[in-house]
Image (cartoon, rainbow, N blue to C red; front, side, top):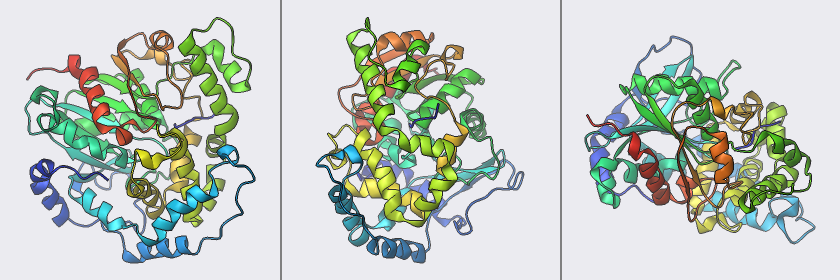
Length: 440
């Protein structure tokens, strides 16, 4: 069974708080992305180095040239998305990509934040690290998935680290760490195998302790949920709990029926029936991308690495399907936000390397049995967003996670919860992790 994944500006108060750190990062040595970041074990020891981003103009210009030279296929022969992403919808986004989109705005936004790199287990890990000005802030590591990135969490940094500016209390504050999974974004691309959820989870624990944290919590959606599950099984010292937006709750006796498209079994409760049918539809009609990346990531990688519009179609298709937007993601995300994410994959040349995480994680990410959720010993929190690939029923969640400490259904938001609904996402983290906070 293959694995499934799975620009609002930071407010001016946060900019003042981060100004000195951003200046330090900006004046630090610039890390070139050409040749790509490939770490050598032991090369930089445990040093944490500032990171400043400026991609060569020739790369940005080449992207624009390729977009403008796209050879388009004929339109679909149906009037719905049953054959895939519709031509007119993609052309509308790509037209702006080739004429009005400005990558440098994202660079400036990232460079206003404290960014760093450090070598862990032979790989350079890029991450954003923002400390709250409030005392006793709870450290949290936020992990993205595919086709997302660290950009999913940018709008949550202010509310999480400066809660009093966003309707919260000082005691709700978090220190925020947002790393790129190896093979994604500005982290280096692994040159060996074995970089699945377990290894990434161990690397995240090293990272948090390298930053001086003796206790922390982990949050994730999509791949981030799978990685947080792995950390929950590993239960390293100092990990207080995990929060998931894509939990693995499907009972073992239902996995086969869902995968095969069998009829919905009798006796399921209403929300269980809805979850069963959502996943059956997903595996039957919408999961081919995962099958390709879990079996032949290198093969699809050639196409995605050579054609920016091919890459855009591959990823935008899922943004369309998985946002809580009735198929129009621009209702909840701006065109620039969507293109920031797609451009990040293109300009870092990580279409193939990101796909390899599926190959490494050759598993069913919705199955409680496959994810060994009953081996998790730390407190687990689950927030169910209505536009997620499936809405985990409470009954399944309680059965899957014996240490479940928090469960809530959120009013709106989809698979990219933090990206789509940053304030609701923040509220969930405050509620979920509140009981785990430790006074100094």
